Image (cartoon, rainbow, N blue to C red; front, side, top):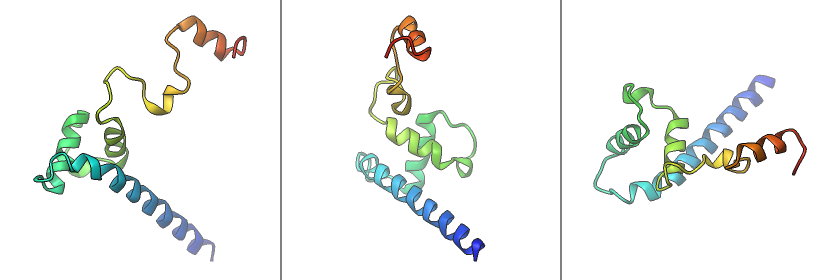
Length: 100
């Protein structure tokens, strides 16, 4: 019974991941609707600097690249942005809990 719930949980996580990819892919693909899915994936791989064969492209690379599409290359990564500080001294003082 435990195995069943473990498998069910893994399937649910895969479905969530797939839905996230599809949600992010729709606006990206609409910019070049004449391309096939493989061509879109190759374009994402090329833009991300992915050099391995396309069948080794991970969903993490796809999701990250789609989330970063259209953002400035010098802009901080969204997950890190909340903790981002321009000034090293301020970042150090915050990390040590001296300032908030």
